[in-house]
Length: 212
Image (cartoon, rainbow, N blue to C red; front, side, top):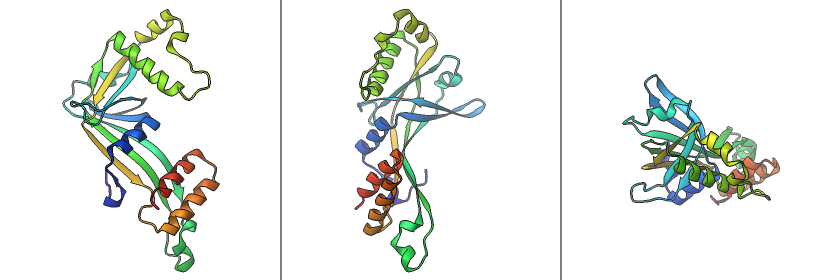
């Protein structure tokens, strides 16, 4: 990923927080027929000695051939996308002075790399599903639990999925959040984004404000 120095995010905790907040990852791997991509919600485990940037866990349908490529000697790549927003040049002070401004697009992304391995174990899968569900349901007023569904129904579903695990060995973050603009532009951009009253725009406004 092309990343100018002023957009390069190197703080590991910041990148892990984005993965936690936006867990739908684009899993990209190389198979015999070429490049394959799948979009999967991931569970993130804390870093360990073997996985210095954490471990990603997910599950796919058994009919999905992606898990069969786990024997590959190539790393898989998982892309996590955070807040994103269109930035109009109308918010730049330079527009009033010379007009020499153009639109751009702000975003925050994390690329995680690691060797994928299959976890075809009912107990592993059950624990993973509980963790994934509990994390997402924590924001609900009345949290749903895996045990709310009939045990035989869950067992049937377990037979139809396969787990995958990726110990992350490399992280690359790119935060394109108007770092190359002036302090006044930061204020203008954040204010303009908040006026749109959109969740992603508001989240981007917060990231831009952190540059002041």
